[in-house]
Image 1 (tube, rainbow, N blue to C red):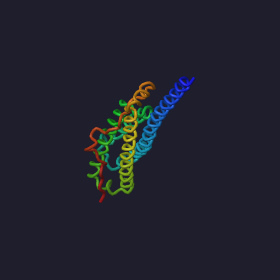
Image 2 (image 1 turned 60 degrees about the vertical axis):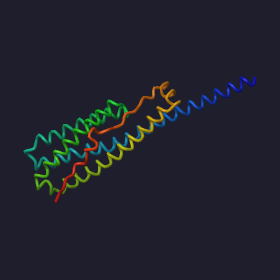
Image 3 (image 1 turned 90 degrees about the vertical axis):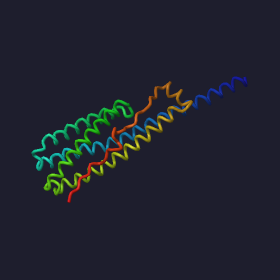
Image 4 (image 1 turned 45 degrees about the horizontal axis):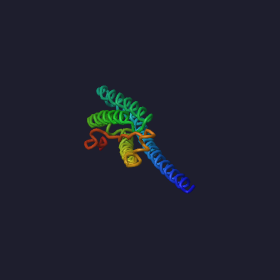
Amino acid sequence: MWAGLIFLGVLLVLGFWGVGIYNNLVRGRRGFENAFAQIDVQLTRRYDLIPNLVEIAKGYMAHERDTLEAVIKARNQAVSGLKSAQASPGDAGAMAALAGAEGALTGALGKLFALSESYPDLKANQNMMQLSEEMTSTENKVAFARQAFNDAVMHFNVTREMFPNTIIAGMFNFKEAALLKIEDEVKRSVPQVKFS
């Protein structure tokens, strides 16, 4: 009888222990999903500003049509990349596609801002200055949100890989989550526009 109670007690302890590990893994996954939602908010804000920026620039940069079209094309690709990533935050393919699209958009915006330096009237336009300021602010928020996401992913991955958590993670198909890295993150900077 005592042996049966001891065995039942051990099973209960193991069961609660397994449930605790499972709940920690779920909490970690939901944590990085929530952190990605913050990236989503900031990137959506960024994407919403770009058409206004291009529209203002069109009036002054009529000869730079290719640059303006490249910005809109890169923006649309980034929106598609974000939608794919929304479906499965942490998926390596989705994160790589989003990072690539973001890199292309940053490059296109950099060209637009560099060309805008050649147009004094555009540089002096109040709406352009305000949009540029909002873009810079949004870029900073994106960087902070990306850092929070990457921190949450790192925490989840470490929790997932620790023994004996790895056993429960394998049993319930908790896959490793991917970081959101911009390829040239060291070189990447917020496009700077100087309006005098």
